[in-house]
Image 1 (cartoon, one colour):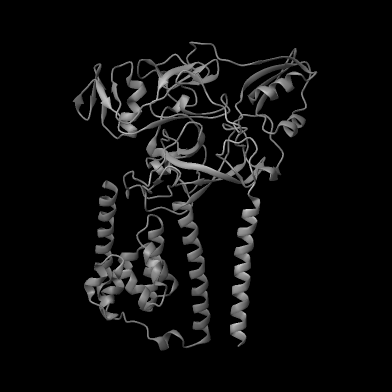
Image 2 (cartoon, rainbow, N blue to C red; image 1 turned 180 degrees about the horizontal axis):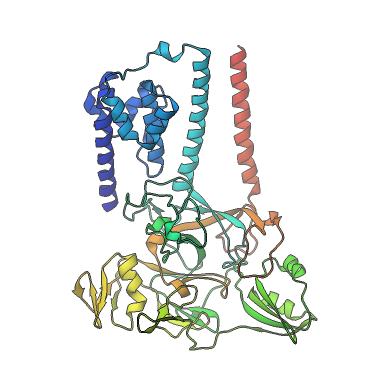
Length: 549
């Protein structure tokens, strides 16, 4: 309801701006000037008068797409009144309501007659260019609709889900898997996630130009939510602790496996995951991996290992005794085979000692001598527990309606939920906890939370470090891999860069089936391409015949 009310408010504002800046133009077209204020109908009149498809008006107030379509309609209207020069078009795009108001209140604004539109061959060529521009615009709008409302492409740049999902896999994500999450920043540049460009590593990422207008915002709302994430689902979600973007749907997208849902209790024992006291269920397509340290008498042929095993992130160190290899992600079977190599002297799985906390500290002379470094890449969640990625928990995943106890011991576990995810004012003063100005020792959870962990357990920045994933951050399920390229992303955690190649065997295979041997649906893609280009061929052929006749 909040979403609808907020959205209605924006529509009213836009309609007022449209009415104030175009009412005289509507009158000159033969309509009552008040119709310029009526949402949808005002643009329907423009489409009718300029002889363009009326059904385009249905797209006028959709998030992200709406501003594109409105700009198109404004251009149609201005051209209808003879304003089609480059500077006039530019002003219509950049300052639409200001420029249209200038035309609206000028004395010389008149509708161009049909005779004026077709006076010369030059005008005919201009009309052909307009038709081409309209086709390009529609193609962009159609692609934007699919990208925003149906499915979104997503690339795998890191090895946290190896070997289930490989670095260089490109997926399509189904945005309706868990109900469609309506856009929260309706004014944005299509196809861009959070920023327009990266200004460089030395600059503050918060200063990078945003691809959306943060001031125009809508609350969280999910349509047709018939399902929620289940244990073992591979899920795409927005990184909860992204400090660069305040908009939830503009935070960096991550993909992990949902290992526990709201109400579950998880625990890591010597690098093995337990859910509700039971060992996790390993699916047929799940390639769970761990960190191994190998000592070799001579250097290994790393390229040969990569060609045989695929993904192989490692660090190589030379010592007086030979070489040390830090393999960041091996399955038990792969580790067994590498251990059998003649160069290997010793090889063991690396398990962090129990009760060794994964918390980083840094000096801070301005305060108490040091502060806890809560950088998620170095610190475990919650930061006051003496846990690490191999010995973790037990930890209960919060569920909507849970009443949790708040004190100095439990606050690190729930502070992000209270202040960031559920948008309350949280204060911790003199050992007392205040929520929205009221002292309290308990809090009621307002939404479900999930635990997302990578299959490559020792090379994954996941919920063990950044904590619970709120339901409102869930994007959807990966459907299938449409492209797979080895060597397209540089692995910062490895001293070896894989050679480039196309992994044809992975393309057009479903992602979330849980089966070890998945069916490839490449023939569906070929069929779609044949239909598309075949349709275009026959349409063009038909048009040529009509022109000849």
